[in-house]
Length: 210
Image: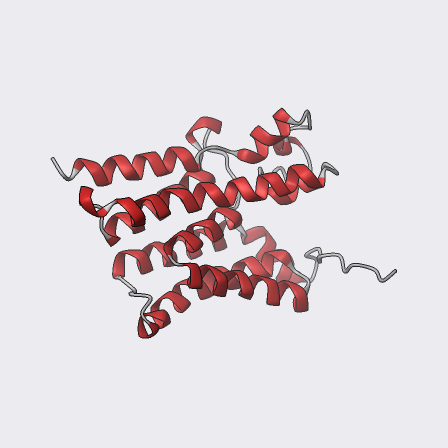
C-alpha cells in the first residue's frame, strides 16, 4: 500500500509541471499566445517578446514555483508517508518533464530552465544559490542566456555531489534526476547550441548607462 504514495506524488508533480504558465498568464493578461510568435517556445523569454515585462516576470516566477513546491512538500512532509530521497528525485524529474511535455497543452512545452532552477532550490537552498549564481555569472560575462542555462544545468549535479562533503547529503536518486534534467535541458537547447557554435546566437542586451 505504501508504494502508492510515491506514485501519487510523482503523478501530482507531473500534473503541476504541466501547467504552462506562459500560455496561462498570456491568456489572463490578454496577450498573444507565446506559441504563435518568436521562438514559439512557451516560456518567460518568449513572453517577454510580447513587450510585457510584467507578464514575463510572472511567468518566470510561476514556472520556478511549480518546480520548487512539489519537491519541497516531499522533503518537508514526505517521510511519514514513506517518501524518501528516491521520491524526491522522481518528483523533481516529473515536475520538469511536465513542463517539457505538458499533458494539458498537447505535450508541447518549454525548455525548462525556470522549472529546473525551482527544482534545484527545492532540493537544497545552497545548491539553488550556487546554481543560480552560476547562471548569473555566465550571463553577465558571456551575455548569452542559453549558454548560462546550459552551464548551470551541467554544474548543478556536480555541485550536488561535491556538496556531500559539506553536509548536503547527496543521494544517488537525486543526483540521477539532476543529471537527467541537465541532459534533457541540453537537448531542448539543441538549436541554441547550434547557433552558439555558428556565432549567430542572440546576446543579452547590456543596459545602457544614463
